[in-house]
Length: 313
Image (cartoon, rainbow, N blue to C red):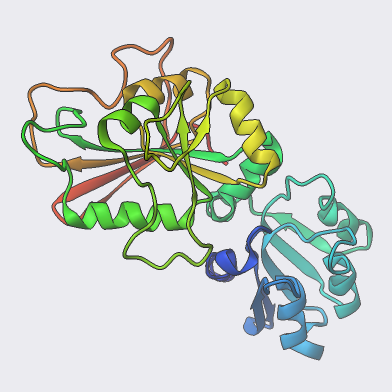
């Protein structure tokens, strides 16, 4: 449960820590939590916050931390130094650090006689799934989102919306939580979407709004045209610090990203309709099947949100 608490703290620190990963830490001595902390904005790492809270009670205690303690000098000294100085006897961490500049903390602590255990928790990796993909792949973590009927159509005859008001609000919350939102040229021409986050808090500000299209864009459309090969555009976005991208396009855009293995997560808002006809959310055929993992469902108003990973973080 203490690792679960560290992961909960990491989730709460995510926006504050951005663009760095959100991390949570808990110090336990004799079965009692004696200190806990999370990444500060531009300040101390979670381990240091928790150790400072524990004080002398950290000696011979166990430290639970959502991400492998860093072992390099960045904007703060290595967390491994603070752990060793505090006299921590055991460290349990939820996920390995994929950043080669910061990794190696577990090995260093073991070499100094600390009992170190990797829990390899999906929940710990999930907290920073966007950052992990950005670090490892050099591109944004890509979510493909669609509102669909029960028979997989993305439009209803004579209806503006497929999904309900609650689902549409959730989409605005998603926009507020990502670095960029993108659509294809067909969606631009048909809907002239704004792609901004409306009616919700956006702690990071508005996302970049992109159109993946050969162009040109219609007059009056205030989107950023990305007209190169998709993989190249994603690498360029990654180099510009874009860690997450929400795709809201139709089946043509979905096919282009899926065929190149550039979708990480699917989010389908399934509405209680049978359209009978109209464009489908996905192309009729993909080059090969895609195995999805971590399938989950939740009720959003009258709709059901289905989530699954094409590529786990």
